[in-house]
Length: 617
Image 1 (tube, rainbow, N blue to C red):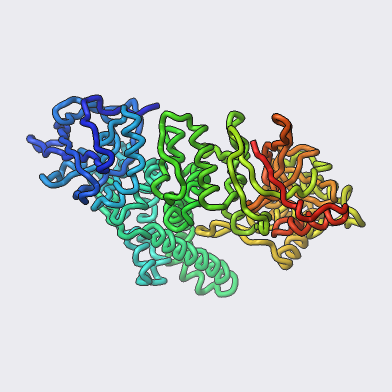
Image 2: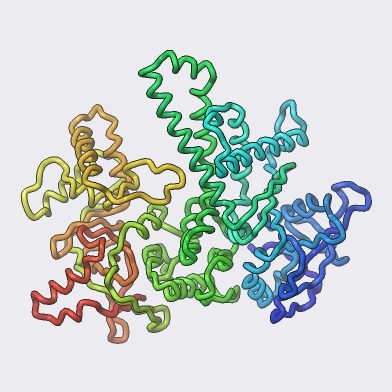
């Protein structure tokens, strides 16, 4: 649904002069909050380096509006924006000019909206300050207790400031180890959780608005807290990770002391540390997701920004009102080499397709194809649907740990309506598939995997699970097998020691029905909604439940994992529709080229034919 926008006359902007509108809040005459909002606007050119500040806010429910006076005209704005303007009116002065998208852009003019979106990176990076207005939770106004609503806002500001100050001190190295066990910070971290639980941090536009700003002032109730620098969220999240690690260490030490030095443990219990540490861990954990997303936007390579926003949205962290904005809301962070201009007259499917191609072309990285399997039927199979995702797919682990397309020369071009051609190697064909595994009755599911492996293994297979099968089921990573600490974006490849420990645990848990089968449960969770397969060449692998027998397996240039695909003939040409990323044993580290050359050589075929032009539809 479109948000409400001012319907009054807007003077045209000179886009060649990079003009924008800014607004000024006229102070109240009566001095009361209830007085209607009066605003005036003027036009300025970014080329002249004007002085202004931006308001970053969550638009809120478009059906809940309030009338304001804009240059003498009555126009509706969302109640969220009205509340932000009313908050800032208390400090309104003659020379304070603000920029707020819903008012300063003629939302009814698609051409203007397209052009202003292109300027977003300049608008926010050139602003003297970005005022992040985080809505005060409605439930807080109805809390029954000893505090009035005003006193509660003061308490929230004090506690949030204490938590943020602590993280800043952590980053500078001035915090002491003693703070890990202090009770006073429990309440502070609870309020910090309330701050970061706001819908404000979920809006996808917020990412670039805050990341591009040199100076951000967070407003939350009575809180005014300034964050400085282009790496402000990286520093905050790293401080968070450091303190979280200290708490985890303290928790382990407390457990050890309880068993080995009971007299010391009793002193700790008397001081309340036994309760403080788990309380802090519980309160801090949900706070980290927004911080991590903003850190990633600051530090990831530019080509990864949009893929990260896509992944984050699926985890409930980032949301957009219009589907176009899953792309346009991050363009301020994308390098100019990615040639895409905002155009709201296009369908969002066309926008997603255009961006997927341009991002791959500009970066010469085709890993976006790994995220494309959730695309809608009316989109090309190679295009990423940025509003949906397979939440089980760990893009960052894949991008770091695998290199299946290594050694294949990169080439990408459009080859027809909705089609692209890439260099690739045909690895094999899926010959046999297991049933789809479920995240239930874990011992039974693992038995099914072991039976399938024994039935198709070329050689004598033990009755117990093999380390090679464990490697395949876990896709050769420790993700899911171990609990990663906050800040660990991805796991690592399995070592021989990892596999030996895992095999011992699985053998014990499969034979002992009374055990809690924790390792078995972790493995089966990783297997859920996936299928084992065997190729015509006898290789084992894992793919998702959409895979079918006779699907082809390709290694594509600049793509980190092999992909399954189905062929069809279009106008006399064979084209392929992507089905799924997959794990193929022995083919995850660039072995594809040599493997294919050996195949061709055995059949007397020119090895220079190993790399083919693969057309994807």
